[in-house]
Length: 483
Image 1 (cartoon, rainbow, N blue to C red):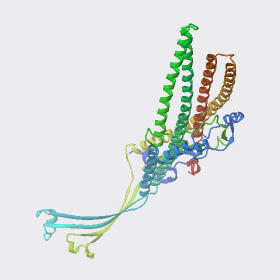
Image 2: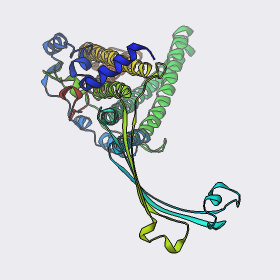
Image 3: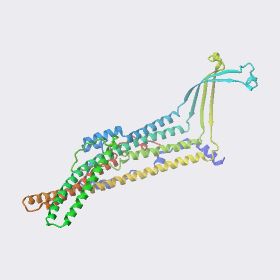
Image 4: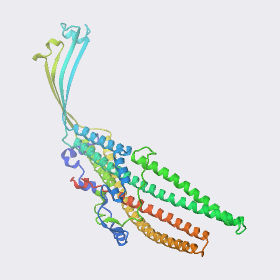
């Protein structure tokens, strides 16, 4: 054994406080909450955001869609994905109970009935010739075992298991948030696709009417064949888009039912769409409370805490294991004498085991646990930066999409005015039907573009709510504790 190892063992025996990682050690490389104030102020300077509070836990109800609320509530009760996360949480909690049990004494009852035939020339019979060769050995006993946790190994293992359970609890909240966000986005995509389908059907009807007029003009030699070919091409393209929208509707229906935990072809009731969404409320304490509002960040922080305790538990392997075992019971080779006082027996076995040479396995285990801890710290840092970028990107996208939606709404209004004017002129004989149909077709195309931007509004709003934690609030954080 190296001399250095001996000094290290003695030093650790004299300094048990060095085992557990201090709060400063745990948080040394952790990034503080990132500064989102510039993005927040830039958003509030636009008319698309207002100062407000964090999303509430039932944020989907703010859209005032009864069918959506019914779907989300059903999904929270029946989604297989959510049930898997719930069982992982249950398994983690039970694992912490298993680890907790190691900190308590264990007591076992043992009953044995051993029949045996002894050799007449065997050592046992030679010592006691009067002992029957054919007989029973009956044993009833209580066994007691306890490991003294002087150096905190079992305590740190328990804290690590509790940290993992806390991480799974936050992961369950994150799973529910992802589920509700995806379901809400799919539901609004379903509504938008139905609205687009109606517009494409109107567009097909208009283009079919144009084809009929162009065919008559071509038959009477009042027009060339080229406009007819162009209108046929546009009509076929519109029918193609209509087929694509119908496919999207069916796929979205399947997706909604999958997320809700229902049969793929279960009917989905259509709700009403708002013409535009109101300004989004942004919490002014965005940078300060982001950690406590994002379940994924909190889950990773609990993993960091759990791995810190695993490092401390690994250090305890340098210390001696001190155990106490006790035995009390009855033993006899005759059933008749089993419960006599002369059959009682007892034993007490204190034990100490100190590692002197382990070929570096203890040190390697500590380094491995510390590497996993450090990796989890930097993974948390990366997640925090990603979260900040995600929120910043969403604020930028929303400002752009909301502004485009306002402009597109004006474009649609002007296209409607042009169509109404041409319709009035056509009724007065100043414009022909082909011109009227062209303006009506343009109005429908602009309305389709407005619907696309409306969906982006809904989708980005859902994504931002998810990025803000969707109403999650942490009950506790590992950063709140001591060393």
